[in-house]
Image (tube, rainbow, N blue to C red; front, side, top):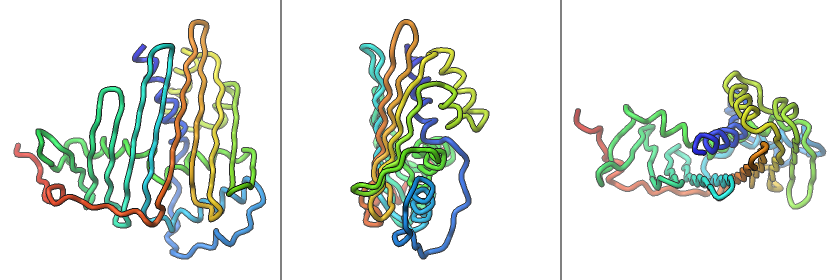
Length: 251
């Protein structure tokens, strides 16, 4: 059971990390809010061009996976300031933790003391913030080139799939992704889902929902993930002094 739920979590994460990073455009001036958007392609271009102007924000990633009476819940939240400092909170069935990224160092609490854990688990901890980062969403969004486009109260892209052929077209673009999909297909021959991305009038990201259903002869697994972005370019982060002064633990 645990392995099956982990597999499904991987499927959800796969939706958020579908393709490789693209080089950032370092220009500080954006004309995206004035760009005329008429279809899926023009919306994706305009929304991506806004990304370089997004310096701070608050985001959440909540994923509810259910299989019969078994439930796995992942709840992440992030506050990122304009200096790239971060506060990350993680909640799931077994863990409730907070850590900071301050001056490119990973600071977490151990035995009621804040420590600099960059050398030990820094890379691992920071990788957990991937579903929360604004630029990372375009790894998924750029795969939605055939999504249905609507312009009402902002803009919405909707992509649906009801078999593995369509799912692979969207996400089987790396060897790691292929392995995850192969494992999914063996465990659950039937797959369906809907991805919806909503943008505000100014082309900034608002809400992303991923709904995934997996079935085999014995059971059905539902996976509902929601990512939100708020306080774009208005987020503030107060770093506690004890976090700023955190040192690496003595060897």
